Figure (tube, rainbow, N blue to C red):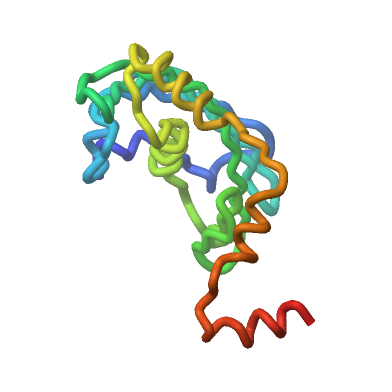
Length: 178
């Protein structure tokens, strides 16, 4: 896509060493991705790319705000993003994603496009459960109630032994006790 070409980095002509890039992310960036769950945002990306003979080490620092839709009330709200992510591009035979942080690129690659990686890092910084800040205190109360542990002594084990079991399981229970 044409809109994402500004995220191309010409790695073929780069000298070894650290190179810094800055990108402004706005709504047009998210429109470039099909079925994007983020529609609006205003973020700054600082990318430090360290090139050596065998690999490229990249460090992404992303800060800003995205607009999300609350899962409970369907209201829009601004969510602050502040994330740091690292990627390593190793030279190899073909394009292969070895792990989440290590990607093999062809030895003769002329450029890399970092738009997809930026989009994924922003997506990873967004919580699974998107709640408007006005529901945050209410949610904290539910989490505290769920985290209360109740300790009991005895009783439960004896009840389990006294319960009648399905005769089909008796043979396996005998093996288990041996």
